[in-house]
Length: 130
Image 1 (cartoon, rainbow, N blue to C red):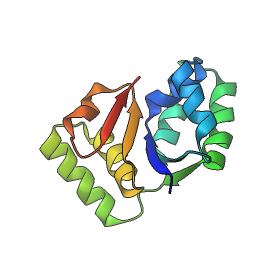
Image 2 (image 1 turned 120 degrees about the vertical axis):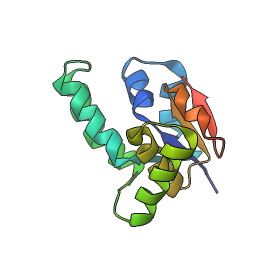
Image 3 (image 1 turned 120 degrees about the horizontal axis):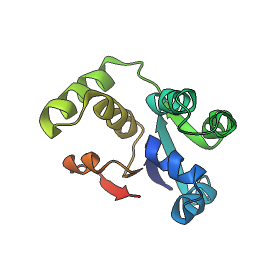
Image 4 (image 1 turned 60 degrees about the horizontal axis):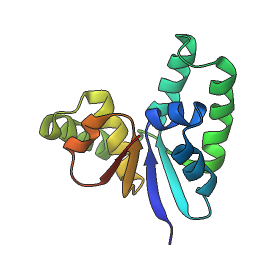
């Protein structure tokens, strides 16, 4: 059984920048780890490209690569939204971070890779800050 790794938007920004640990993890997905990504991260990547924070070609590459390598967790059940509301309230996360985390937890994430230290407010998973 593979460990399930939740990948937040910041992970993909660092992957684009060539962060060594991110590149290594990305290469190991499927073999050693199973990656899960919130559908919100797909929207955030698109927004970052529209704002010029990442190259459009990088966003397009990720748009194709993420679903090919990771499981996308969609907000299609009331349970995810209910959990997000509770995470936002209980852990003091912004609602968008809470929705992302709720999706990752619904996907079975045991560890979350992120650049957002706020995720450490929730102690139910390991958080790898990059």
